[in-house]
Length: 320
Image 1 (cartoon, rainbow, N blue to C red):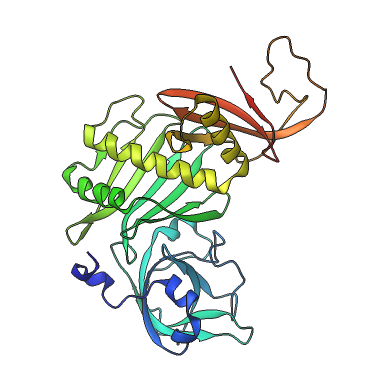
Image 2 (cartoon, rainbow, N blue to C red; image 1 turned 180 degrees about the vertical axis):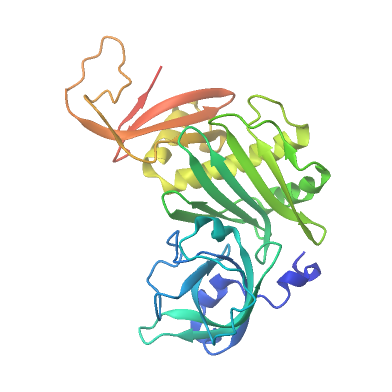
């Protein structure tokens, strides 16, 4: 697909630059990446290389700071505030030279840039899932190589992992068959899924709402099931207690962990007055020890489960 998309032609993924800095140092490159302001999600992982005016950009492979080569370098960009979370959905195409600061930090000295419509190089699908009881805000990018980039925008943590590339391609091929712009009905505390994908060489967008109130078309349900599984795996990888809950439920049900979907979890720990962690078993006595942990809500084979896990991920309690 990349050879058919003018937006991607000549573009170097940020991860490639970070993996081989000596090969790109001093070279002029082109990036297509999302604006991230003052590294608002911690994707670069260090402070600005030059001044507080430096801002970050990120694609599915990595993140890097940028700095203008002169007063005219960023003239064509829209007005973007480095503290504005809404601006982090703005996709930029940047041409610049890879440089290293006196402190040894890589950055891109931008010669010219513009805001563009599309997706970063190699990305076939981008998803923003928002809502739920805990007010989640997740970002997922699926690439043509089968690598997924998952970002929890609330807790500023991210992970990358691989899935079946054929599954990614099937989702990418199925999305253009959905001709509408939105499916389902918004509900309080329900999830919304904002999807961006390629339809031939044009970026398209559509929204799925939580299907618990209004059923979605069969193809939309198939796609949403896969996306939900991908997001669940991303959540599991970011949170140790979530992983412990998934593994405990899979063991209890004697099923693979891949069949357990993470619906939601507490982003902040809570305290229970005893070792039952709020899920006491009948006729069992628990030590009155203050126990901190998380509530995790899972789904497996059509059933929902509430599981409480201590902060270390070593104790698990199944709630009735």
